[in-house]
Length: 181
Image 1 (cartoon, rainbow, N blue to C red):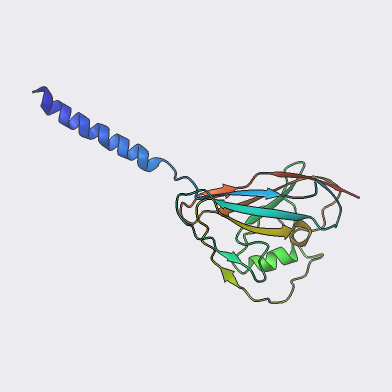
Image 2: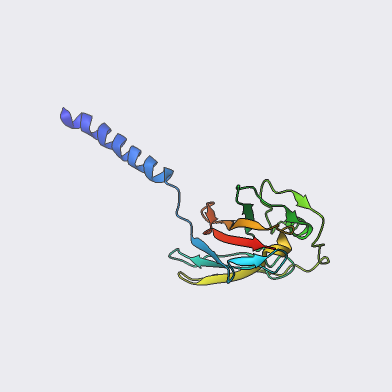
C-alpha cells in the first residue's frame, strides 16, 4: 500500500524539479567588455571606447552588426552617466541613427540638437559574424560623436546588448572617465 502513495509523490517531486529547471534563466551566449586608452580627456576631445564581444557558449552564435552608418552602435545601447547617475543627452547623430532600428537610445536621455548633425543618409551594411566559442567580435565608438558635449566632471560609460538567443540583457563592465577643461 505504501508504494501506491510513493508513485504520486515521486511524480510530484519530478514535476517540481522540472519546473525549477525551466524557471532558471538561460546563461547569455556572450559577454561584453569595454575599454579606453584614456581615463582622462578634455571636454569635446575624441574619446574612443573599444567594445569586445566574446562568445561564451559552446556553439557558434550569430551577432548582427552594421558596418555602414551605424557601425559604432552595432545594436548596443550606450549609456553615459554623470557622477549623480543621470544619463547624459545623446546627440542628433545618435538619435538619427537610432531611427534605423540598429541603435537603442538610452532610456532617460534627452535629445540634443546643438551638435553632431546626421552624416547623410549612409548605407546600411549588415554583417553577421558567427564567432565560435571563445572568439570575439570587436567594434568601437567615439563618445563625443554620440553624446552632447560633456562638461568637466566624472562620468561612467556602460554598454548593453540583448542576447537574441536567450533574450537576456548583457551588460558590459563600467568605465570611469574624467572630463577636464
